Image (tube, rainbow, N blue to C red; front, side, top):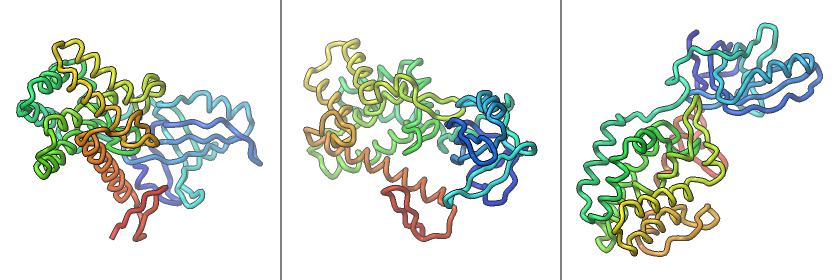
Length: 316
């Protein structure tokens, strides 16, 4: 079976390929029987798939055989709904069935950079940190094999920004480079504290997300979110290593809790000192820039402007 990518599917294309199930919607009636909808995904994006069944019982059997994160072979045809491509499966020639043989790299996107090299760059940056308390805190994480196994693969988001294997590490290095520039321009800022914010602010995402055949939230991520998870991870690590300056502990934990900037953006608190404000803006800028670049790359259109919710990208 030749892998067809979501991003290449166009109206009237025949489809015979495999995809991961990202979401399912319960069967509903239509004039000829019952249909159900799934969101299928691969390394290049998502697409809606509609299975047009007949009898309710038969449709329910097929629907019940499929589970979120299953990889399925889909045989169908691309049409459009509200201007967006979708795959229609019309039995008996149309098929959707679970398969066991597939290449995960076709389904889950990965960073384009070498993860080992990124880790080495991060360790080199940590060695250059002058504040010994910040350095030993960061090194305590980086020298933990169990943590690093998750950290090096973690995405920075499910779909919004850096939503791929290694995305968190790539995001962190982007932030550090910008923080170098900002702290050169504003020497009053504590560069080491900014670096601590870069490395530790999203550390809860190592637990918030699970990478299976898709990137999804873990149960803990759904219930607690990465801000609270990260806060407790860092607070517990500080307590464990001991003899950590109290004022520095408060500032680092504040950077984690305030980095979304505003209360309406999910921050429990808003930035209260210059490094916290600068960092929240740097983090927001990198996240939004990556998101907009992704929109423009996936636009697949000749239009000059692409609008996605409140986002608008100029393509030419």
